[in-house]
Image 1 (cartoon, rainbow over the protein chains, first blue to last red):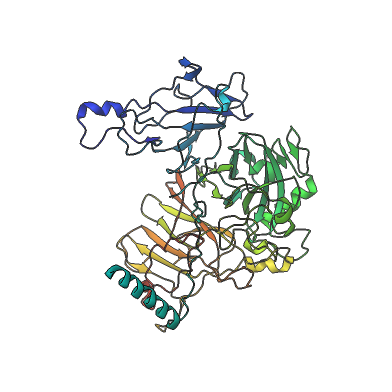
Image 2: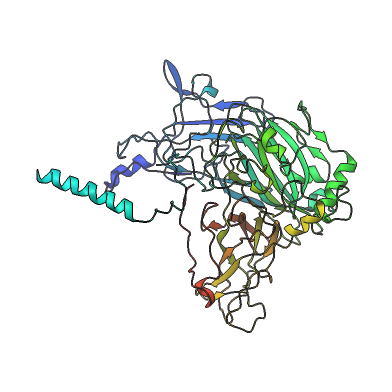
Length: 154
Length: 440
């Protein structure tokens, strides 16, 4: 995953840790039977927000790691797909406009310690799409269904 | 007062100019203010997915057979029906089946299971309602499909050939969102008025597995080609596209040639290669090409999809030396020979289908300029345009490393045809480079 940082130009060295601790907006895991899974444990105010682990500007993370929601309980599947809203919420306010942060995701699949392929994840919108609202309807606490964004190009 | 006088002079001047100058020619590119009208192909949820090339060794046991897998994902909460069509390498539709995708559903399909064991995944059927368990293809039909994809013959076509002969099943796949489960194929014009839908919700990827350690032991993979409907959503009657022509152009009904609203694909590409060297570097191009046979064409016409001309190919080595096909012509003004390629093929870059390395070149790599326009010899396209194509680069080394990636298009499906020959041949004056980005 590549993620846009939050440190501005000519930033002091001490601020680069902000680009280490960028929390993604929302991640949902679907198994092959369309069962959703989301992380819990975050702060609650009217609704409870999930607690996602911070991800830096570039990282390679196993889909089994705790950065992602677990497989749905009792799921017989070994595969599925994930919805990733990696907006970092621009914690330092360094962007020129109110917008989602920029990101890119490459999927690496492996098998039998001898096969491996890379391919880009499918983007649900483009850099001009309006920021996605969350939490989504699939978590049971939100009202914003997951789906492709309207295609908006300037 | 001076301002008023200048304003009057401007009006009179404009009127005189309008009365005496010739009529202005209309702009060459259609005008639109819709932000969705893009011919650029990107990996975003789409209404049609294209697997440009598949290969399955149907004669080998499962543990050692090369196979191709692909995965379909419905990224929206509403149910979709994905209509899967397997085509031969001469673009004959050999098999079609439907995959019902509930909201956020994902289906992985191993073509070895389909073509050898006759197993369609749960949720697949030629007709509705959709079964919850995996279904099977009748043995006689399965054998006929295998023959079509390996020997190029089918009982539907008698002695007429609809594909080449190869030891593996070879072809390409299209996947469309549709309104109902039918056995209609995209060559039927009624498919577009009655069945096809326009919801840009599908995404998917493919993997090609080579498990034989003697011949090669690696996996290749990438995203499917995502072809969006523009505009998306609704039924065939609810919207009209601003695209100048569409992906299914040659099959669409005569009165509504852009009814499918699918983005067209480009004709020119930049594709990297590497071959030779002590590390056994090798590269193949997997090339998908738009055929020329129209909808509901007689079987005997599918040979036209076998020998489709290519407009131009130029090979550059790592020192920028160009190389083109000579074709044995001794005169400097000879046009380059048109090396034919079928509707889908995997070709080694070291083969005679491409220009040779420049004489004396010390390098093992470089890139190729590919203008794959087939010049539409049957005149079946709705407009004068380049034909559509897609190129995937496969690179290998030491029989254990392999990667796939899409070649870079030098324009999009709405670009004007690139005029050959190019300046690099010494005979032309059209430099190679990216084509202007033209939106419909």
